[in-house]
Image 1 (cartoon, rainbow, N blue to C red):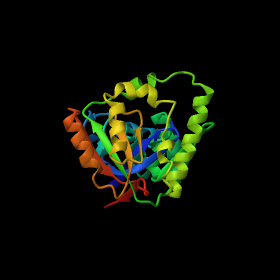
Image 2 (cartoon, one colour):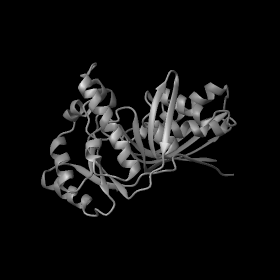
Image 3 (spheres, helix red, strand yellow):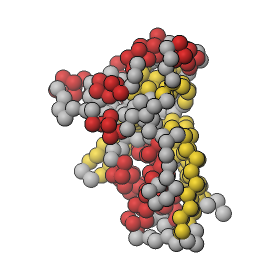
Length: 299
């Protein structure tokens, strides 16, 4: 039996549209093995619909690897236990893709390197900003260089926490991406470059004085927030409660606040705000994950 643990991830991180992402200590755990025949899939996921047939995302990711290395398994068993909320901007699909590919790679004789898997997973997902953290952990900068995907992971060492605010609704990634303009002003592109660099420096250096500036975004959040009821009011409240920075996680609708680890009242403050304003949101405090995917083989 092959066991794969893959972390959740938060992408974009405000100004780092399609380039920045961080792994979080919320996990999807897969158990996969080759069997004598057939396909058996057991799924326990956090919301959404996970199919138990050949349309299952984990299986489709496994098949991409099998096709790539010309391996035909006699049968496949998949069991998934995932705590990552589906369709909420926390990398649930990337966790499925990365986990499935890592499992298939072991079954087929480890013919693919992690760089190979990164390229294949990014191609299947469509962009690498969730795939990188899911595979390597830490704070990741991702780029497409020709047909290659390049990811550089930095392991953080600070006392930051990540307050994940998840609503009871979802926004389809295709719909959210469709809201984005085809062209942006030069001044907006320049502003995002400076903000993204400031964000990276703040997280790595431990100087959080400009972290709020680092998540300032002009490329996607102004267009996507229309699908998140109460977005501006929630963001305002997070800063009143001591957030160092707040941004839309991935394509949303999850809102993420970066907080000082000593701010132990943040979650309670936000939960009260949600109750008082009839918002059906939950706030959970997570930590960054520096490890990434973990693969283990059991008899």
